[in-house]
Image (cartoon, rainbow, N blue to C red; front, top):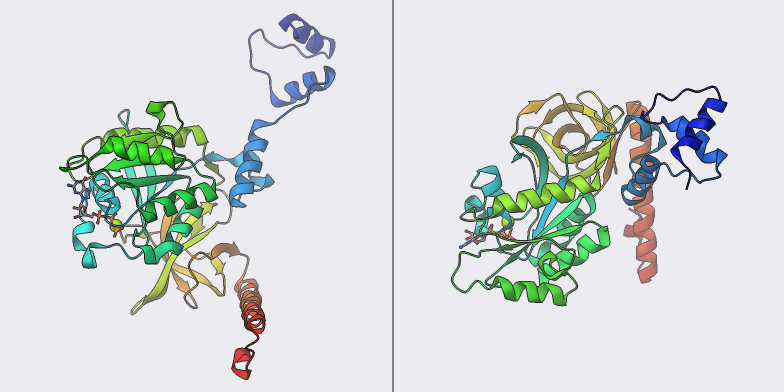
Length: 364
Ligand code: GTP
Ligand code: MG
């Protein structure tokens, strides 16, 4: 160990006079570490590296401009286990009641203010469908999220899409929080659900494991506050950061064709700030952002990190899961979109050739 006196002595010898119990600057730490041959690990740089590995969105230029960003949470689980009802309770809406056949068929992205310790904190929630047909959407939801919230109905237990959702979250390397829902129902057996979860490798915290599990009733709102608090705690530990002062990058959540607006695309901005007038390229689509709408359909001028935003101005409908990026000019955007289109065409041809079923129309 190196004593405080030694460190002070070192700085004095270099003509630097630290003022008692002050903090050491980064450069001072580097100096002292090289003097004593200790390896310097820049925690911020390591974090950026880790984040970059996971999401490939932050780069070195962002290092000294990082700011906190809201957590992106994806709600996943088996059909009818209460995902949309939970979000309705949190958002004070009634989306679930209006859904065709009572099932969610797309990804909803919502910005929510959560009151924690008397302060309003922003969270972004993605609602995913639980029906087995929508596995691709669950996978996509897991890829853009910081934390997966797995909803399991206490009267039904682990079902196929519960297991699938857990697998997506694990593949994405994100922390998992379990909401054991419908505890108000006759026949609810939350203890059995804990048992089942532990048998698929999710050990509850209350049994000494590391997966937080909260027993709730989304319908009645029981313990939803506890769940939100748990979510914010896990989010805080992740130290989520981004650099809002640069051109935006992010992921397409959903896209479609609107009769009056033309191609509309919902993005989650993952780094930078997306602004009206920006030129973007997203897969094979590109265009100038003509208007931006927030999750409530209100026109906005820009959207920063973690924020979901609907964009109009693209020349056609991009494919879900594509990434978007702001580029310098429409010419650059067109070029990129065209070369992406070419790549996709080539992939298709190779796929078909692989089948041994190449026909003239394969090349059309
Ligand atoms: P998909 O999106 O189709 O996968 O379903 P979901 O998981 O979003 O379920 P949804 O929120 O649509 O709820 C399904 C049904 O369960 C609805 O009738 C809800 O009212 C009911 N439900 C949800 N949460 C609770 C709860 O905590 N208690 C009770 N009793 N019913 C609930
Ligand atoms: Mg739903």
